[in-house]
Image (cartoon, rainbow, N blue to C red; front, top):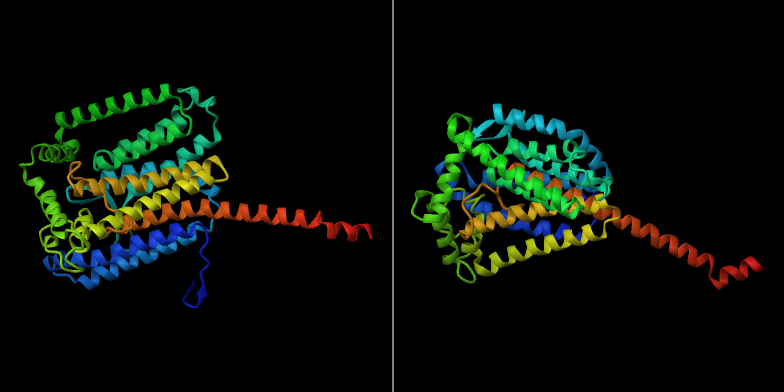
Length: 401
């Protein structure tokens, strides 16, 4: 591949690259279409939104390409160094972050772009947990107190600092970390204790918020959304109703690109509810294809994790893949009213700078594991060929002569 006159060598799992490109293409088309009404209401332009989203995707590709050429083992050491700065960054975001949609989840970067710090914290935490589990044996991990500060406390701090402003991300990250602990050999007894501690901490947090409402304004939002999901009578259910209408209107082949009607009524039609627009414009076939691509993507990540040359590479790929899968499942589940409304985007498809960048970073790290595995296999094959050549009859006859 050539870019600006320079050859760009793409390595690692080619199927994963292709699948990521397909999702990005679907997202670009749908974001362009779904942004029309939002751009009109805000006095903007669909071409401006398209250019901005394309710039995020291009920069995301650069991130993934740069990261995938690194040795994945460096990510464990970086996570170990970054876990404390990330926790401090979450504290700063919680106290002085940019408040958007009644939630303080973002910080503003020097060039004006907002950045959701919880997305970066999630990747750093998963890499940190994967490294910790890889360097400690299952027998050693049995001692709960010994590893509480080094392993459990960082998980609780990161999740706890994300929770006040973003319950869905905190729950998702805790669930993925918990599953990674289980896969990494953390004892069941300790896992049960951790689950109990998590439930108690959540109950205590909710009690504090209801006792002191100024601590967080998000609990009332969670309560409203859950009530809307159960009863189906609240105005909060308006979003899901329009999403379901869009999916139903699409039927089998869809109305065609750019012809969605429900995008004019759907809040966050280019991000949180973008799947409904895909279903309306591309029909069951297009929506089904999107789901199949995600399933195939996860299958490839599982294959990479299974073939990884080290426990860290395997756990890292698996953890990051689970984050991508969980985000996709939550977004799709909200669109079809399986769970209450949350703010999770559809990875590589929804509009959003942080989402695109962090998904690209995660995929780059996974591709780094794949790339390293390919190099190891090539080296082993080369050694086997050299050995075979040295022991061949022709070689032996020359040595005898």
